[in-house]
Structure formats: C-alpha cells, structure tokens
Length: 422
Image (tube, rainbow, N blue to C red; front, side, top):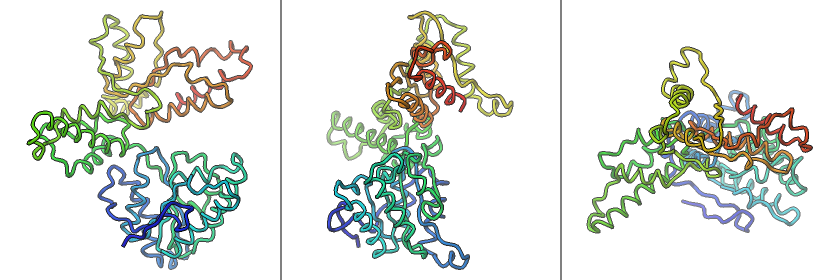
C-alpha cells in the first residue's frame, strides 16, 4: 500500500511511497546506464549479505547527471519499484528555509523517515540547489551541505538506505559529496542517440494505434537532440493532432482514429528539443535549390558537412578528421546565412543561429560561460550546425584588442578555440 506524504518541511515529512507503475520496461534508450544503476543500487538493497561476505561496504549514494528530461527520475522510481523499496523524493529547493536550523532539521527528518521505512531510496531532485560548492554559498547553504555530508556518513553499513541525487549541473556540487563513501558512483544520463530514440518511441507508442504509413525509424532519425521527455511530448502531440483531425472530419470516427505520418510531421514541427529552447534551433526546409549560383561554395560545404555525416565509416577507416569549422566571408547580402541554412537542410541536421554580440556580457566569466553553454547544448542536439552571425564581434584579433580593458574579448576567443578543439 502507498505511504502518503506531503511536501518536505511539513509536519508529515517528505513524500514517501511504494512506487507503482514505473518499471524497467518504461525506460528506453538507456540500457547501459540502467545496468550501472541496477548494479549499484539493487544488490545492496536486495542482497546486502554479498557485501558482508566480501568484506566491503555497499554504496551509499549514486549521482545521476545529465540534461533535464533524460529519465533520471524515472530510473530512480523504476529501481525502487523493482526492489520493493520505499521511495522518498525530495525537491531540493523545498528543503531550504530562511529560519536558522530548519533546513538541517528537514534533512534529518528525511533520513529518519528513510531508516524507519527501510529498505528505502532517498531521491534528491536538483540536488545542486542544496549542495552547491561551499566556497560559493552562504551560511545556510554551507550548513545544509555539512548536514548532508554528516547524514550520508552516518548511513548504516547494511545498505538498506541508498541516496540518489539528480542534477544537470554536476560541476556545481560540493567536491566533498563526490568522494568515496558518499556518492560512490556518478552515472551520466545523456541525450539518446538514434537507436535510443527508437527504443523510447517504442515505449511511448506501444499502446497507440498507428497507421501503416508511420515509420518510427525515420522519426528516430529526424529527432536529433530529443530527450525522453521531448519524445513523449512528440507522441502526445501527434495523438492530439490525430484527435483534432478526427473531430473536424467526423466525430463518429473518434473510436477508430489512428495516428498517421502526417500527424507526427505536424507534431515534429510543433515540438523542439528542450536542450535547445534557449536558442533558436530548427531543421531548415531550405536546401541548395533555394540558393542561386555559388556552385563552388556549395561543393565545398557539401564536402565539409554532408560527406562526414553520410560517409562516417569511410572517414574513420581513413583516419581522417572532418573539419570542425567553416568560415564564410564576403560583403553583406551575398547569401552567407542562406548558404548555412541550406547546408543544414541538405544534411538534415539541427541549425542553431547565434548573433555574436548576444554572447557578450559585462560580468566577468559570463561571456565564456555563454559560449560553453551554447556548445554543450549543441552537442546535446547533435548533429548540429552552430552558425555565428557577425562572428567578428566575439572573435576579433586578440593582438588588436588592446583597448579592451576588461579582457572579455580575449577570454571569449580562448573559450571559442577550446570548444572548437574539443
């Protein structure tokens, strides 16, 4: 039976439950990651005597990190369900209180509850919000981190309580949490590749009546950068499109409605990868037929962009690295932006357009961070073309930038070079 609870900090304590519904069959595209999680969590909870026999302590914590929507919470729930453990979920920001000592008390209540209801999994969502680096935090934040460290160190060696933390900002966590005996294992839950997206599509369409013209392989190949939550949103939007279509034509047809290829195409146009929502990311419909002239430029772009995507194994066999960057130069109005959009359309990849000045910020370190974040998100949406319009605004000659007292221009160029080299 479920154990009812309320938000952390209320008298009843954090929400605890025997998870229902979430199983390993609900997780697609994360076979390797799921195996690592099972290995780290299932054994200590289901067979703790194995660790005693080996003379070692079972893991106390697992850190799941990766972009939002990749399945971190779903994995934690599924593992708890499979081992029949109480699942206590804590939303990081809800722990924090402005009153002295209350945040630490809430944390202690969470771990007391877990011990009483063991075997248990304590799941901290957005753990970075309560366990950031102490050098960067205030007095309250530092006390909370210290309390969390103390509680994890005090967990029973029998392994009947395991802590799972989830974050999309792993580098912002206090280093002490990432040492052995606390979060013993860190597992990246990343953006799925094409095969992973196909598995996720299978999960979300297994009860959906699909028309014969729906090609899930093609949908998987066209959803670059989509995480599990995006694909779930895509399938739901396709189903809603089918319902709207059926209602408009014949209300009696609702019982027999099927989701078609056209429904998925309409949904794909409406749903964009969550990783790219801070930027304008799209799959352009423009191709080389929309560009007049410029045959030499088209050929060079095709060799640099389309060939590595199409003939990847040949490049690997020849040990040849494709170019990481292409510079289009010429007077305004000659078609540089159109060419960039066209090669993205020809290659079927995501296109991210960034105006150079948008990356500049007056605060120290913010411009470099904007460059890092842009490339991180582009990697999540790969294959992708990042198009810098007016790149001279952020990548001018460092020797000629002596008048820039802040040094921001030089730091941005260095960061851009680092990203291109990586």
